[in-house]
Image 1 (cartoon, rainbow, N blue to C red):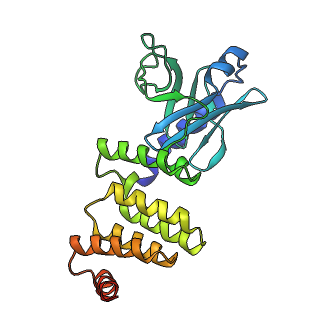
Image 2 (tube, rainbow, N blue to C red):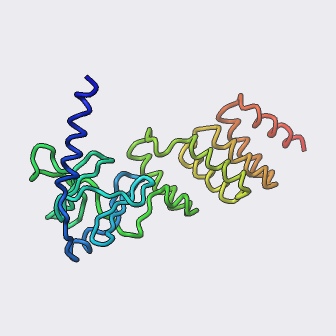
Image 3 (cartoon, rainbow, N blue to C red):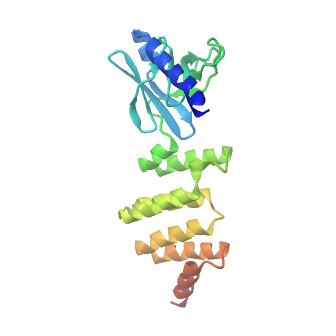
Length: 232
C-alpha cells in the first residue's frame, strides 16, 4: 500500500522535471517579478534570477530552484504547489498566486509582493529594531492571539540568550516587548526584573518583581526580592 501511495507523487515530480521548459525570461518579467513576497505574517519569499534561471530564498534555503513551466508559472517541490506571478487587475498589486490543481487557468492571489526593504517582525527583532518588531508582533496578536509566531516562552528564551551573550540592553528590550505582549503574565515581569538586577538596576528590578508578585503571590523569587528590598 505504501508503494502505491508514494509512486504517483514520484512519477509526477519526474514528469515535471523532464518536461520543464528551458524558459527564456524577458527582462520585463525579471524586473516585475524579482523581489520579496509575503508568505505569512512573519515570513517572506525572495525571488531572484541568475543566468536567466529563477531562484527562491525561503526557509533557510538561499538557492531554491523551482521547476519552470513558462515565464510566469513554476512548481515548487518543497511546497508541493504550482505558483504563478500575477497582478490583481483592480489594485494593480502583484502576487505569487497558487494555481488550481484541476484548472490551469484558475488561480488565487496569495503572496503579496512587498518592497525589497520590507522586514517581518522577526527580521526587525534580529536587527534590534525593537519598536518595529513589537508593532508587528502586536498586529499578529490582534489577528490571532494564539499564533505560534508570538509565543511568550520563545521571546523569554531569546532574552536570556542575549543575557548570556552579555547584550544586556538588548535583552531588556526583548523582555519589555514580552511584557507588552503578555501584560497579565507574572513570568514576563520576573524575567525583566532579573535582567535589571543583572545590570545593577535594583530599583527597576524591584518594580518588576513587585508587579510579578501582584499577578502571582506564589512567585518565590519575586517574593524574596521584594521582601529584602523593602527592608532596606
